[in-house]
Image (cartoon, rainbow, N blue to C red; front, side):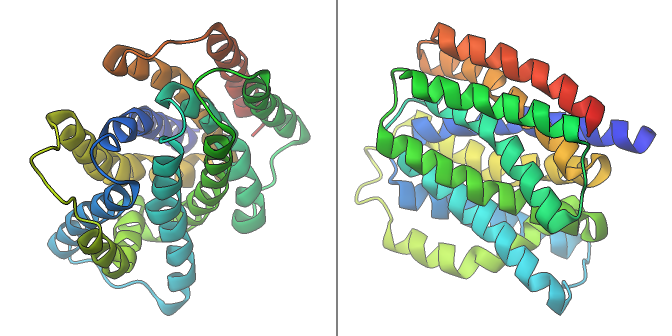
Length: 286
């Protein structure tokens, strides 16, 4: 019981940190290209991860860990940041945040496929209802998004769910911060080359908000958040703790409204109320 409680607490901290990712990305892509932002955040986080690994004298992963770490890198380090960065050029941060409500369902499915978990049937009911609330919001025709942006967000959700499930499974054996650090290092050569080829033509036009956004997604979204998140998934279960992501839109709405001045539609609030209720139900039957 204490192990599960610690997992849910750690997972909640990770969700709160991740909630600032999309608003911060929205600010950063105003001055940085999506390709540079995605690669630069990965390079910065990889250097932090390398520092941690060297300081703690961590052993290298085994050969059979390379494929799972590659999937973690594809999902969390490259795929999700890049796809969301492109998507945020076609929608507001507040609109994109709602799609995060689909991430728990994707994570749970990959948790079954890759993590060997078997939630109770009632769990899937609450998970699907939460996802349906998000899909209903999108189909309702809320302002602030386009078809291209929404398709990019759906693709981002799929690759991210896979990365979360793989990372959580590895974290049970390697540790949460070790997993994200090794995944970042694995992607470092590619991301460093991309960063060099996509450097801004002029640095003088980049404003302070964009630099702040880059700093946030590099340090917190790409490193600190994953430390808490993977620990939570490993201790509390991928499918169960993964449902905490349903709360992420609620936190994200507040951040988008406070820092970006974006309007919050009543459909967003209604969707959030439904999915928050689904978290409680999913937790009970996970």
